[in-house]
Amino acid sequence: MLGSCLLNLQRYEILMKVLLGERDISGAVQSHNDTRVAPTTDVRRKTLGTLAGEFLGDYLTSDGNAEAASPPVEDGSASFRIRLRVELSPDDFTQTESSIKELVLLRNNLVHHFVEQYDLRSADGCRRAESALIAASDQIKHSLDSLREEAIALARLKQLAAEAFNTEGILDDLIHDRIPWCHTVIAIALQEAADDLARDGWASVAEAVDWVLARYPEELPEHYGCRSWHQVLQVSGLFELHRQPGDRRATQYRVRTRSSNLH
Image 1 (cartoon, rainbow, N blue to C red):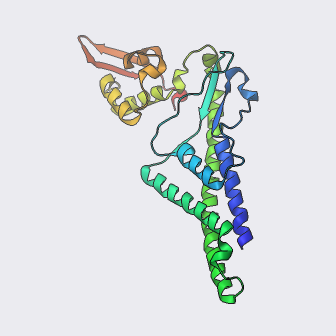
Image 2 (spheres, helix red, strand yellow):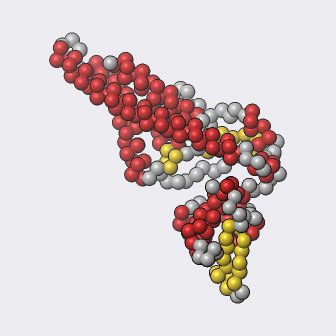
Image 3 (cartoon, rainbow, N blue to C red):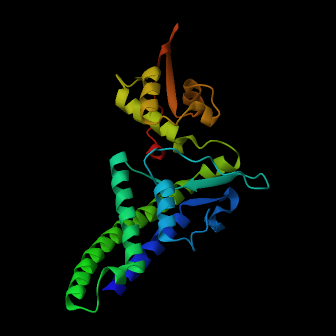
């Protein structure tokens, strides 16, 4: 029973290393199909406690803060970076953090202190050890199943990212230093705002800006080389603008097309 627990703990540790090792992909746009980027950190020799700390602070998060973009490739050609993270609600993050820390503590007790805690020379001590191992096995299997679900989700995210990256036109946009607007978060957010706020087919730009900032506070025009939200709406080519004479806040917009690229 002890051996079974330790084997499952090793499976858990290996799977966590896989998740941490594949969470960050970057390289040159032109060669992305052949790029195999090394993990941003070497996780192969790290202990479960160290891995858990990185997993909770880097892969799982509750603050929504993204890291700065990676530096461009040396020859100055177009580059890409795909950063995979899972954002949880504060309550879910706290619960997950507690569960992982309890598993690390359990692992340390099984590896370093099991013989000290139970008298395996007596029948009573063996019975108590057996009960503890049954509970430990259940806890480990539950944690391993949860991490496997994360691995399945990561594989799905990578597949979706690859499909989006290979969408017709997006590579051409990136290579020629053009923003692929229909795939940007800010454009998708503006479409969602239009769907939610539209009256008679048109939505107020001012109301839409407030709507987007409340839900996507990190999305700002300057991140896309624009001076204003109106410029985003104009240069993206995805929306139509309708201005009321003499009243800028009365400017309205609507989605130009219902392209599936916006979904």
